[in-house]
Structures are given as C-alpha cells and as structure tokens.
Image (cartoon, rainbow, N blue to C red; front, top):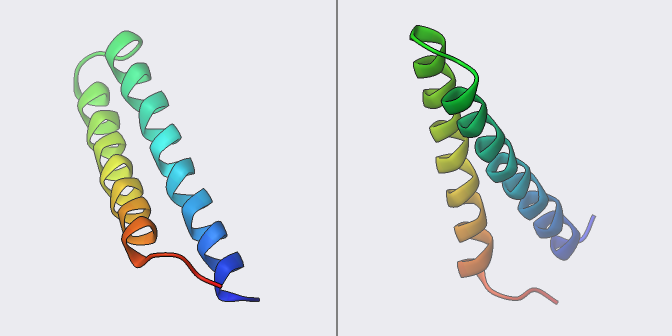
Length: 65
C-alpha cells in the first residue's frame, strides 16, 4: 500500500471518530441523564480528541506523491 493510500485511510478513520463524537454528544445531551450521560460524554470527547489529532497529523504532514 502506498503512503498516499495509507494517509487516506488514516484521515477517513479520523473523520469517523469526529462523526462518532458528534452523535455521542447529541445522544448524551438529549436522551441520557445522570451517570450514563457523563460516561457517554467523556467517551465522546475522547473520540473528538483522537479524531482531531488524527486529522491535524494528516494535514500538517503535507502532500504525498
């Protein structure tokens, strides 16, 4: 697998983490209460952090040929 294809799959994984965090945050705010809302929110913010770091890594790494 070329480096460009690997970067593509890594960036898609980062976007999946970001989309998952959006869904989990909305779910925890509107459907859950109490301890479950806190646990799901923490998981959502972890996904947000991982997704953001992944996308930033790919963007700042620069173009590949």
